[in-house]
Length: 555
Image 1 (spheres, helix red, strand yellow):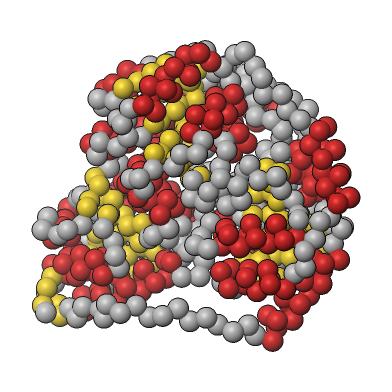
Image 2 (cartoon, rainbow, N blue to C red):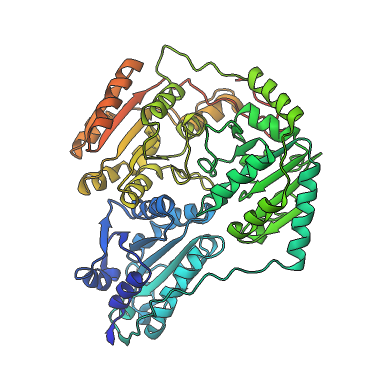
């Protein structure tokens, strides 16, 4: 059948099972929006293009599908750049479609023309500039395949407006899905598995690290099975939280810059480290030159480029984790590591934290929030900063995809729009967004989208009237010279919420927080809770820069 390029986009999205797209219209993408008018796709117009791409990102993280985002050319496209980089560093599958000036004007500095293809090349898994209308169906289908295969990531398609209006022959794709091909292990793969089994069997002080690459399909079940069979302690990176239940007796907490002392001591004292889906970022390793000293590292990852990139692995296993982990599980022997666990229990006793306090603090608030939501289907999203680390340390996260945060890029402004996408992806769950007073100023306008879509989001603003994490770095490393980090004026976030027709609550004491949280949880409407805490509060523990993982700053 002959249809316009804009309708080709619609049909290809429907073929891929897409039912929701996030976007913002503009001149060079109007042919698509005209076709969208008669389509069954649900379109979520956000307050800003950055909100649209973070929402598509949150949508993908919450349900494992490919998120879709739409924007026009020029400033519409450039407003997506931060979101693309965020999804790229966290390996999130997105297909991002941008309008472009007509092909005959490309390179002429036409109104709202920008080379988004060139700009985004380093921060996308792949990108396309469509130059021939007949190529459009194949390009869109390829984009979805690339975005979700192997190590997932964002793919951008830049489509000139004349390509969108061109009439082309469209042949619907065969609806039959090709069966998954289970690849046999190569001789090298079998050899590496044999070596891994031998090393694990000889380990006296093994530790299992769970990274963000394990947040997928059946992988978490295999991770739990492996940990329980080996009887090893388990730690998580920031991105891997929720894969291994936080209340499991083998779980020691998060490792890295603001990880628990027990988790970091365990990594430092280990003789064998088994890393699943972790890229060994600098926030996890601290000093990568000494991280693996005295250890044998078994690195399991879907992306072969990650093996030996940051940490030299003794055994590197690359491939589909859903296929590799069951094989490893069948081959390893049961273990207990009794003496190792005795050492860990001594650390747990030594570094025990007293969470009892009479004043309202972020850690107390987050633990109270965990208790109030225990056993119920909740998803937590965060922005970036102190509140993010407090949430990672104190929330009880027991299931995959219950934790959505910006890891690699550390994007302030991510939390609220990501929560919008997550709530739309998982309407059977309640999403709670935890943000700082600085981050909410960046994308707080997305409360417009929350209100427009009548979403039951609960947004908790941890308000310390400063750029908390930056101030903390100034406190520790810059002689308490707080340059540009203290808020020059107070913002009444309760009134801000009410400006969008959303109920706002203020909590300055523990009693007030318990009361307003109860009200918010009982309601099926959106609400904002402002939690006032002192700006002097710091995130602890904190690793000493470039030091071993058992060396902390005294703050």
